[in-house]
Structure formats: C-alpha cells, structure tokens
Amino acid sequence: MLLRIDPSSAEPLFEQIGGQVRALVARGELPVGTRLPSARDLASSLDVNLHTVLRAYQELRDDGVIELRRGRGAVVASAPDHGPLHEAISALVATTRRLDIPPATAVALLKEALR
Amino acid sequence: MRTPVPHRISTTLTTLVAPLVVLGVAALVAVSWSDELPDPVAMHWGTDGPDGFGSLASAVVPMLVVGVLLAVGGWALAFFAGHASSTRRIAAGSSLGMSGFLTAILLGSLDAQRGLTDAAQAPGITTTLLVAIVAGLALGALAAVVTPGDGDQPATQPIAADAPRLTLGSTERAVWRRDAFSRTTLVVGIAAVLVVLVLTVVTRVWPLGLLALALAFLLLTMVAFDVSVDERGLVARSLLGWPTLRVPLDEVVAAGVATVQPLKDFGGWGYRLGRGGRTGIVLRGGDALEVRRTGDRVAVITVDDAATGAALLNTLADRARARR
Image 1: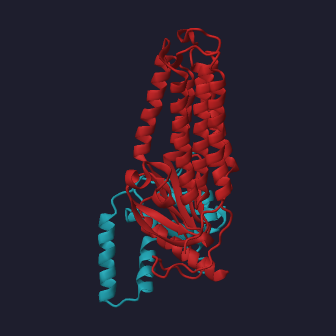
Image 2 (image 1 turned 30 degrees about the horizontal axis):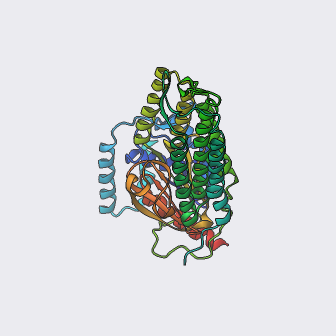
Image 3 (image 1 turned 45 degrees about the vertical axis):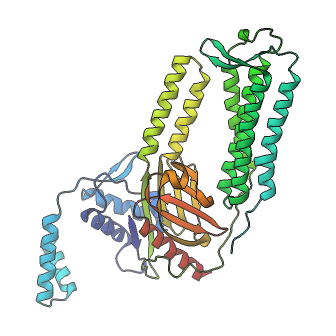
C-alpha cells in the first residue's frame, strides 16, 4: 500500500493517514485481514509523531475499519459491501456536475447531511 | 562502465586458500595415520555401525575432490561476480564451512579407527557428525564475519530519466509497504524439517536433530519479508529481523520491475545469489522489484505491486539527490 501525507496541508496528519486507509479499504485494495504496518514503523517511515499514527489507528478502530490486536498489530476488519455506496457517490458526482455546483459546496452539504 | 569487483585478495584468501589449506592438511593427517588404520577402513555407517568399507585413498580422494570443487566454484563466483558483500559472504561461508564439515567427517571417522585391526569394530559416527555440523557452521560463520562489507557508495549520477516515477508534491511524504511471503518455501521447509525429525527418531542419530533445528531457523529467516520504501530507501526485513536487505536512497541507480523465474534465474527460493551476481530475495515467480545500485550491484525482491515501489524509490531518490 502507498500512503502519503502532506504536512503543509490544513488537514490534520492523523486525518490524512486515516482517510487514505479508509479509501484503500473501501476500494478493496486492502482486503480483509491485511496487516497494516505497526504504528511505530509507520511513524518513522513518514517521520511523524507516534501519537499521530496511534490516533489515526484508534479512530479507524472506533469506526470498525480495522481491528487492533495485541501482538498482531492493526488488521483490516471485515467491511460491509460498499458497492451501493460507490454507486450513490457516482450519482452524486454526476448530479453535482450537471447542476454545475462547486465541489466545495457539495462536500459541505454532504458533511452537513452526515452529521 | 563496469566497476571492478572489490576485495579480490581477501576473497581469494577466505574462499580459496583457507578451504584448500584445511582440505590439504586434513588429507596429509589422514595419510600420516595409514600405519595405524585397518585396511580396508570403514567409510559408511548404517544404523547398526559400519556397513561400507574401502581403501584409505577411496575415503580421502572423494572428500578432497568435492571440497576442492566447492571451494573453486565459490571462489570463482565471488572473484568474478562478487560486487555485493552478500555474494562474497555467502561464497566464503559455504566454501570454508563445507571444507570444515567434510574434513571433520573424514578425520573424525578415521581417528576412531586408529589402532583397530578390523574396521567392522569401528564405533558409531554420531559424535563425529555432531562435531562436523558444528565445525562447518562455525568455520562458515567465521568466513562470513571476516568478509569485508561494502561501505557507503553514494551515487554521483542522477536517476535515469526513463526510470518510472510517481507524482509527489514537494511537501509530501510517502511510504510504500508490502508483505512478501513464500508458500513454496513454507511447504518445502516444513517438509524438510519433518523428514529430518523422523530420520532423527528412526535412526537415533540425535545430532540430526540439530540439523532439523538449523533447517527450522533457516526456514524462519527465508519465508516472509516486510518490504518498505520511504526516506530510508528500500528495506526488506525478514520475519526474524535477519537477514535484512537495505538500499539507501543515495545508492539507488534506478529501480524498476523485473520478471523472476526462481529456478532459472536464482536456482531456487530464499535469499539467493542469481545470474550476473544479482542478490535476490526470491519468494515466488513473477513480478519483482529490481534495484540497480552503485558498485554494479543489483538487488531483486519478488513482491506484489513492485511497480509502485520502484516508482516511489526513484522519486524519493531524485529528491534526496536534489537536496545534496
């Protein structure tokens, strides 16, 4: 798996890490049972604080994306089928483009609705 | 432009001269015992003691020939293709280790027959086998330890323009990571350990248990690797942490994807030397990450999604070189 972070971005680093893992799992690029690198290894690879990675992993665990197992580290948990969600997102994107709504507005509306 | 193979004198000493001296001295010692030895001597042992006999020469000559062939083969490999310290180390270790193992078997079995009139009375070979395994491993490890390492060899040229890259913002950091695992090694390794364990129990030659232990250790060092590419370069670390293959960013000449056929290119699976002096972590056939590094060294590791790993390695190496 390829993970990238941008320290100059406004988005907090733990959210960048968590968001990419979420996307990889949702797209099926990290199948169920895949072992993620240990928090310590990932922190030194990306040259970030250990607590940044731990916070990302904890949020992923709270949302059921991964399981944290003693001794085995972080493992991708079984996820529900995301197929219908991807279809709905495609439809959302198509509608946004058709109505010529700025992406930021669409994202803001989506965030509001999911709150 | 080819860089010459380094450390040729030390390679010749540890991989050719030392094993030949060990073999030669052992042969001389064996011949010097000829008056005290029965004729014929015992050469082969079954579960109930010696069961194969022959002249002293027929015991010494095959050992010498096998030992010399192994030493010359190892030396030629290290002398002509030993750009990487791992190549020279493996060659020196196996040449000297095998010479120690072979001579310990020969001298141990003959020593136990000195003063006997009938070789059929020769005692069992269990202790000799144990001593020979330990002597072989110790001499092999010694040769590997004294083999000089590669040292830092920072590149002076930029990464080849046609090598794959990926887009990475100037403030972005990235890591690529994969687990690489060998089903073949696991299956063959477990089978080998079980066979030796069963043999140990059936023949009651307990030193063979040591061999099973050594095989199990070897299996654990060769079966699974953690591969990563980040600011530290390429790191492929085995399950046990040893062996670990490292290619720092400043030694990358270019990374790419190669197709590996384990038997044809590397003669099998595991941490291996391949054709053209390549160092390979060979866990399966198919796509592999191939890194050409400074000093005419090439490292290969069979891993999924090697294209992404290679592209990131080139990209990070570009960046590291621009910073210098």
